[in-house]
Structure formats: structure tokens, C-alpha cells
Image (cartoon, rainbow, N blue to C red):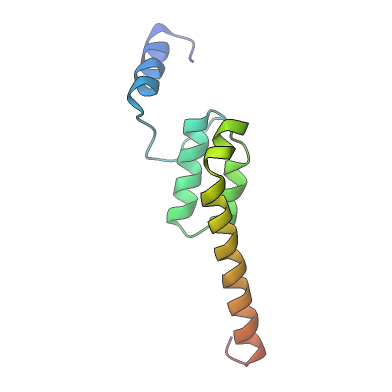
Length: 91
């Protein structure tokens, strides 16, 4: 929640309003984890985003499971496409 009254008040307001960080930030709270995961997705680093999401609490991981499954499928599809291209000599 934060050490100072201001930190606690900002955390309360952020929690109540659903506002979360748009820029990646340090920390282990869900907002920080999601901010880094979103930045990774925007840079097309899906594996890194999935690794970040693993740090969420179980409830957060459950909420993100459908997205995580789709991201894993995309990673596998991109890898398979690269393998086919390599086999055809079109790296």
C-alpha cells in the first residue's frame, strides 16, 4: 500500500477506480506486473509477457488464462512457420 499517507491514498484511489499504470514500472504488485507485461506485448515479446504474468497472484493468473493460452498458441505458430520456412530454404 505504501509507507506514507499519500501513497496509501493513491493506492486506494487507483484500486477503487480501476486505473493502472500505462508505463512499465518496477514492483511485484499486480499493477506493476501488468504494466511490464503490456509493454512486452507492445514490443511483440509474448514469451516475456507470459513470464511476467506468472508473477500475478492465482486470481490474476486465472483471469489472464484465456489470453495466455492464445499467446502461447501464437508463439507456437510463429515458431512452426519459421521451421517450415527454414525447411523450404526461405529463412
